[in-house]
Structures are given as C-alpha cells and as structure tokens.
Amino acid sequence: MNAITPRITIDGEDMDFIEGQYESPGNLGSASLTFQLPLTYAGDKKLWNKEVLFYFNKQDSSPMFRGWIRRTKVDLNQVEVFAQDALSYAVKDGGTSIAQLHLSEHDNLDGLSASAAIKEAIKRCKLSDKLGILGNTSPVVSSVRPPYRGTIQLLELIKSLLSKAVLNTSTIPRPNIARLIDNGNKSLLLIELQADLDTAPIVHSYTELNNILSINIVNRRLPSVVIVNGKGGVAGTFSHDTAISAFDRNYLTITNDSLESPAECRDFAQKLFKANEAVQYEYGIETLEGSYLVENDVIRIETDDPKFAGNFRVIGKKINFSPSSFSIGLNINRKPPTLAEYISSRDN
Image (cartoon, rainbow, N blue to C red):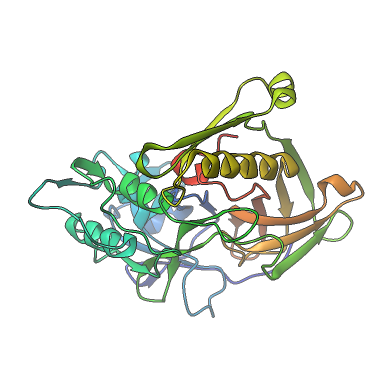
C-alpha cells in the first residue's frame, strides 16, 4: 500500500485516528468523512457540530474536506465519527432541517445574476459563515424568468439557476456546474463550465496494466425521446425509432431559454441525442493514483477494447485511509454535457 501522512483535526486539535473514509458523490451532493477515534479519547467528549478538517497529507495547505460532525457511534473500543461538508445543510441527509428561503413579490431575488442570487440565498439561509461563492455562470443568466416565489429549498434554487445557463457555441452544448473548493479558511461554491472532453487538459492517465486495480463498466440507457423547451413557450421534440426499439421510451426534457423557435429546439434536441448516443459508458475504477483529482477534472483511460477507451470526467471520489496507507475509488463518465445532469439526478 502507498504511504501517506493524513491529518484530521477537530476544532483545530489533531486527532489520533484509527482509520477513515472520505467520500464525495459530486453533482452537488454532500461529501462526508467517517473515521474512528480511540474510546479513551472521544468517549466522554461532546463532538456534535464540531468543525472537522481532513488533509490527505499533513503538509497540504488546504484541506481535502471541511465539515461538521453530524453523529457519533460508540462501541466497546472506539468512537465512529461521521461529518458532512457545508452542502449538508441543504440536503435531506444533513439533518432534520433543510436550508430554505421564502421569496415574495416584495422580497425576492429578481434582477440578480445567478451568482449574485445564489450568494444572497446563502446569506438569507444564515450559511455565509460556512459557505461562500466564487465565479459566475457562462453565459451570465438572470433570476428573473421565471421569477422565484414561495418557499424554496436552497439546493433546488441553485440547481434551477445553473440549469438556465448553457454555452451553445459548439457542436455539443455545455452546462455550468458548481462544486465545493476550499481556500484554506472557508468552503467556496465554485461555478464553472463543465469540462469539454475534447479540449480540456488531461490531468491523469490510467491503464489496465499499470495503475487500475479493478474496473467496473456500466452501459447507460440512452434517452430515446428528447424534448427541449425554449423561450416564450416554444418547444421541439426529437425521437429515434431504433433507440426506442432498443431502449424503450426514455425521456429527456430540458429548458434552454436561448432558443427562440421550434426548429432551434428540435435541432438542439437532436444534438443532445447524438451526443448521448456516441458515449454511453460509465466507469468505476479502483486505483492507488489520483487522490487529488476533483469533480470535472478530465482523465484518460486506456483499455484493450477501444470502445471503452477515451477521455472521462471525474464525477465522484472515495478514499479509504489509515495513518499509513490508502486506496482510491473514482466515479467517472463521458456523458455529454446535457442540462439534465443538474435538473435531475444521474439517471440516464
């Protein structure tokens, strides 16, 4: 096993942990850190809501994980600690209360850019001390159409605002994503374009012979009917009879306010289908390399079967570690950048 010097702190105090697991699901899911402490240390301490930092190597300037303790489990020999990051305040498994805000005709986010609206929403949810924001959507979009009203969950608002922004200047449209980064002092929600597999730099390369311990390949179901809603109520549908025969009717519905006619909507729908048709495989790999890869990084996979080889985006990561060893699991895909990635869960 590879040797490392991981570090875990609770409220700034270094912990003599036994072993642990870091997991980041991506797609605006909350990352978690689970680790075990000796009962002699943690058995009589109140650990709930304490800040936890995890450094993959103790010399790192910024933590791989910043979160807060959600629960502990005590047995005869040790205490298991479970912590989640700042996004946990906006998801169901973060606790009994989910961050939300109420918007009305007199108190709203109208007229703000997506970035400014998200920043204001975070402030109204009283999370500014835990979560900041960096960057803006490309292209910049407004929170006006449609206006947001009523009680809205913070995470759903963020996903909705991101879904409005799509860069449609190339053959395959590219949406915007958001992911957590850490500046050494605070968690920041970074907004950026989803990586283009053809042009983004390759961060790391893997082969079955050299640095892949195991590999799992999933053949995804393709959307056979694509419905695109444009500006002002226009819409267009593209369906593929052969795909319907092979995969049944799998619907993909998206909204793109930059499209102003049914013909533009149908053309956009056809682009999305062709992009999905070309790249329908997802990988899960176990490896000892790539600990610092993050969501949206592009890596290269080489296999004996050329249809499985190519460039992939990192979408999630899991690291099992002890004070002296580690193993890494990566979730990667080369799904085309459709808006459905952030309108719904990874469901294709």
